[in-house]
Image (tube, rainbow, N blue to C red; front, side, top):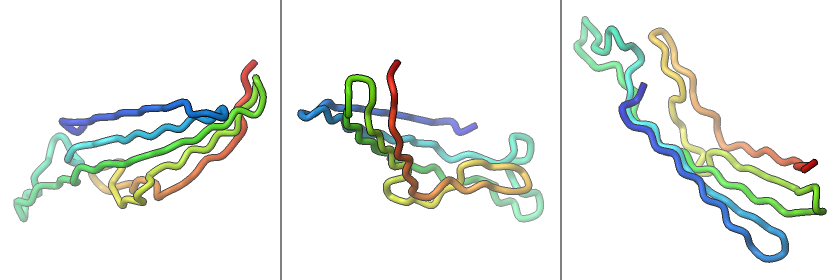
Length: 105
């Protein structure tokens, strides 16, 4: 677990039934192993650097019960280590988008 993490998200309502939002996630530096954080042979610390990832969204109401919704993740297309394991790492996803229609019942 990283010692420091921080997440924020803010949305705004605009005219014409539009809502926009943006936010970010910070994950501090962390090690891949809680039992052996230092390489015994070289003495180097097995640590991944911290990172920021920023996301955004836009939504437009179509009717009272439906809205067109789009999210964009990792806006800056940052290269970062998402998951650390003692024998391997998993990279964080690159810039991606999710577009859909949201229904309210």
